[in-house]
Length: 354
Image 1 (cartoon, rainbow, N blue to C red):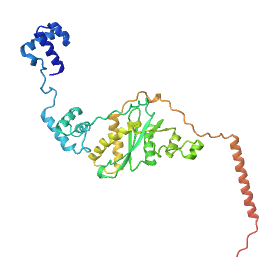
Image 2: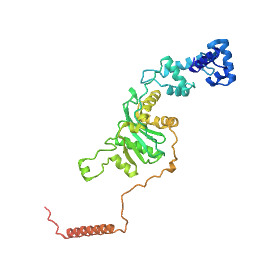
Image 3: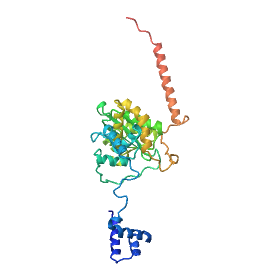
Image 4: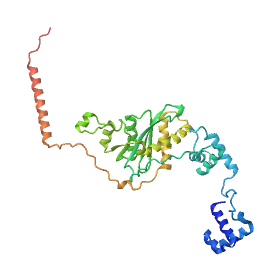
């Protein structure tokens, strides 16, 4: 019996011993007087067992039948089970059961069935480490970027590095698979993002020499800011490069790595993809479309409200500036000098042939 039902038994026992009236019992158990009279009648006729809910111990009227349950568990056991690192979780398994097998059911129901059959286990809840930073308000205000070196193709192909870009406001994701986290791989992924979504205001990256570096002694003495090749490229586009002090600071892209290492690896296995080129085609045409449809969210404010700061470009003097005139005069003087040297060389006596 539930605590609520036990409380009713206690109050109605006092009514039976004439310590309370039925109207007082109704106030204590927080029901109407008519409902209290019905409870009192059931208690007099059946005792404490009469106050137990009539549906207790019975299966739900909306429950799936046993034949459907066994069919689902058989599919999960044959197609989506395996070792701890290979088996599908309840959410992913429910998606594939609906897409591939035509068996539609809720992921939480499948989770309970899998736990009961030993096909899934409770994961330890991690202790909260720190407060989560609030999302940016506009799409494109910040893009978190990081690389994840992993056996994405398992034993079918070489290890690779997935360059992952995640919009901070909406969790919209773009990814490219390559061999290493090199300047060319990073720039190729950023260029693909810009061609698809536009130039972001800032990118949130690791403290790596690829993105950001510590100033040398000479730079510190001059007060110069250290710039990498990637930072120079972003500066040309007006993109601010922000380096995170810890992996937790850019937790949105770090959590995406865990999602991809679970879902993407299993989907690549189902498709039998064995090369980085084929994986990138699958990422662009199928996986990322479905991923963004399922996990992306709307930004708090429209992107049209975002005011992009003007890019400070190098100053170029106009055509009539004195510097331009001095440069032209210098060029003319050099040309006249070269012409005079050529004329003197033509007037010289020809050398005697040997």
